[in-house]
Each structure stands twice: as structure tokens, then as C-alpha cells.
Amino acid sequence: MTLGIGILICVMVAGLLLRMPIGFTMLASGIAYLLVKRQDLGLVAEQVGNGLYNSYVLLAVPLFVFAANIMNAGTVSERIFDFCRILVGRMRGGLAQVDILVSVIFSGMSGSAIADAAGPGLVTIRQMLKKPEYPRGFAGAVVVASATLGPIIPPSIPMVIYALVSGASVGALFLGGVVPGVLMALLMMGVVHVIATRRNMPREAPIPWREWPAILYRGALPLSMPIVLLGGIYSGAFTPTEAAAVAAFHALILAGVVYRALTWRTFWGVVMESTRGSAVITIILAGSFMLNYAFTAEGVPQAMAQWVDSMHLSQLKFLLLVNVLFLVLGCFLDVSVLLLVFVPMLLPAAKLLNVDLVHFGVLVVLNMMIGLIHPPFGMLLFVTKALTGIPIGEMMKEGWPFFIMLLLLLVAITVFPQIVLWLPQTMGYVTR
Image 1 (cartoon, one colour):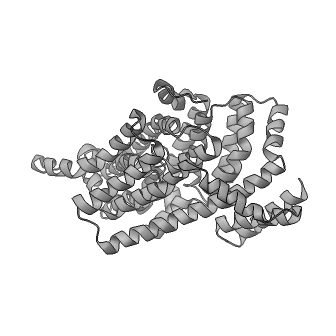
Image 2 (image 1 turned 120 degrees about the vertical axis):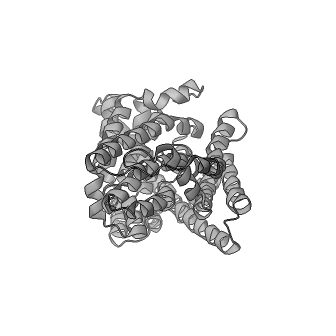
């Protein structure tokens, strides 16, 4: 390890221990590296500017953030909830099943796990807590687990950022997440069914037939968004980045014009919240460009590729090693750090072993979603606790079956890449 990299790591660890914002910590680490190496500090502006403004795909991130916030503020979550209650509410543990199905639908609109938990997840928790048969820890655990569907089922903000750092096709990545996302949802519903049957959890009261047309009508327009987005992308009508603009416009028309659920005050709040969220992501991206410059200048990715090559690892052994690495690092580091710092270091080794970058991307994102649901970082646990007051310990106690299920699915996707690659290849995408 060189002196420059050593100083960079020390500054980053100190920033994390002092609870500095991660974006500023990354920038400070990069600046410290330049000072030690006696390089021009103007490289900070050069790397950040070139990284941010030469990437068309990055425009999708703030637009998807805005679309998700508009839908959460515009009664879309409640309309989808009522629609899903017709479909799965009569199953044992009906409200928990409804939450999973709502997450599947909302995932096709937002691409964000946090937005899923804070929007439709909050609606479902409030309904479950009204009934004593649903322990609050179980209610929180279901919402936390189902929120991980957001970045797996397209569209996906983490996949857009992964495409930026890897050069993989955004369209192929979106398609690669469909089958794993559907499997996740089905397995979660199976876990809920087993738990609900053992605990004799209630079924939802049947909804009278005369109310069905109104509920279906209320839910039909929100359901049109995933169809418009994915249909437009794969028909060639617009690019994935343009799809983000379509999503934001679609959500704004629904919430503001059709449902009239947005006042000017609410809309301004959505704009400010989206601006703050996008600014946080942008600062983290800026910091990552500096760190990637430092690691590349020191030859860290190439050294890692040579180390992997010297170990004579197969593709499978390398991917299993990556899983272990990300599961361990996910206990301590933010998703953005894993995605923007560690993934670029691993990409040369993945390419050396001829690992499909679409398969690798979906695998990495799933690892990060698992990191969101276990402590000590567990961002989804903290978000749900902040919104509902449910203790993290209670959610963890009830959430271990979902955690184990996700680990088993991760192993299956690692061993059988066609779970990810079948759909992109069927649709004609070159995935390597």
C-alpha cells in the first residue's frame, strides 16, 4: 500500500467515525491524496466536472427521485393498496401479502427502496398496526423486506449508477432484474403464507362486488406507468434516461391534474425534497470520481485483477468471493460507497474472468439490498423505525426468515446466471 492510498483510507475512516456526510468524506479523502502526492488540486474540479457532465445516463437519477416523491405525495400509494387488496387480501395474512404486491407494482415506478418503504410501506404498516394479530415487528419486517424489490424490478436507480461505472447497457440491466425480482416477490409471499398460517393471521374482509369497478378504476392509471416506461424503452420510443423524464411527467399529471392531490405547497415540498435527495447523490458521485481517480492512478484495480488471476479462481468462485465481500462490507458501509468505490475496483477482475457485466450488476445490486436490511447500517431498518417508531430489534427478530430467503436467492442467481440473463438475451440484448 502506498503512502497516498494509506492517507486516503485514514481520512475516509476518520470521516466515517466522525459521522461526516459520506459525500464530503469521499471528497476530503481524494483531496488528502492529492496533497500527499503533491498534485494539482485543480484535478478535483476536473474529475468531478468530467464525471458528472459527460454522463447522459446520470440525468435519470434526479428524475426518478422526483417521480417517486410525487407519487408518494399524490395518493398513488393508497390507490395501489386498494387495488392489491382485491387480488391478495383474502389470503392468510392478507395485509402482509398486499404489501408485497404493492411493492412489486411501485417498484415499476420509482426504482428506490427508500421511496418504497416511505410511501406504500408506511400505508401498509398503519393498516397492520390497527389489528392485534399483526405484531409490530412483523409489520415492519415485511415492509423492510419488500422494499428491497424497488431497485431489482425495473426501473432502478442503483442499476443506472452501475451502468455509469461499468459501461453495461441500462436496458439489459433493467431486463436482467425482472426474473430475480419476480422470484423475490413469490418467495416473500411464500414466507408470509407460512408464518401467517402458523400464527393464524386474519384474512381481509371480502370487498363487495359493487365496489370493484371504482377500486379498479382508481388503480388502473397508476398501473399504466410501468407499462408506459418499459414499453417505451423496449420498443425504442425513448431511452432509459428519457424514460425517467416520462416517469416524472406521468406522475405529475396523475397526482396534480387527474387526482388533484397536489397543492402548490405540497408540490414545492416535493421539489425541495427531490432537490435535496438528488444533491446528496450528486455529492456522493463527485466524491467517488475522486476516489476512483486515486485508485486508478495507484493501479489498485489492475493489482486486484492480477491477484485474482494468480489465485486461478473460476467465475463461480470469484462471484462467491464477491458475495462474501459485499455482505461483510454491507454491515458497515453505505450502498453508495460499495457501488461507486468497490465495484470499479472489481470490474477489471470480472472482465478478466469473462463474467457477464449484466449478471454481475444484478448480483451486486441484490447484495446491496440485503445490506439495507441488516444492522449495523441497515438503512431500511432506520428509515422504517424513524417513520413508525417500531424498534429495530423487533424487526430483526421477525425478519430473519426473509433475510435467509434473500441469501438463498443470491446463491441461486450466483450459480445459475441464466436466471438474470435469460430475458435480456431473449429480447436481443448483447449482455457481455
